[in-house]
Length: 110
Image (cartoon, rainbow, N blue to C red; front, side, top):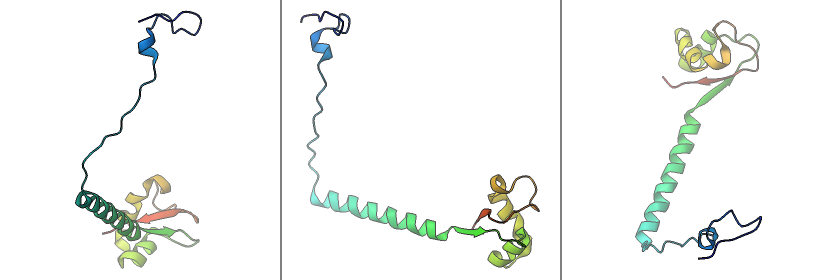
């Protein structure tokens, strides 16, 4: 083992330590059944994600909207407006009566 010298010699590290590491590829013995199961699991997760995304409803506030009116529209119960407010507090702020046109609100499931 010789030590490298000079400005680019990494200050005394041995030549052996400065060689690039090589990576080896794992040669697993995956069977066709294992691969098919992995693909099926992946497809199922994708389907679940799409379903979850489709279930999330959003409402863009227009002039004249109120949280109670939005709750009436989506839940058929104006009294459920606090459910919408709690889900959108970061967008609406501290006062549930101050929603503004253009705000995009998430309508949570009951």
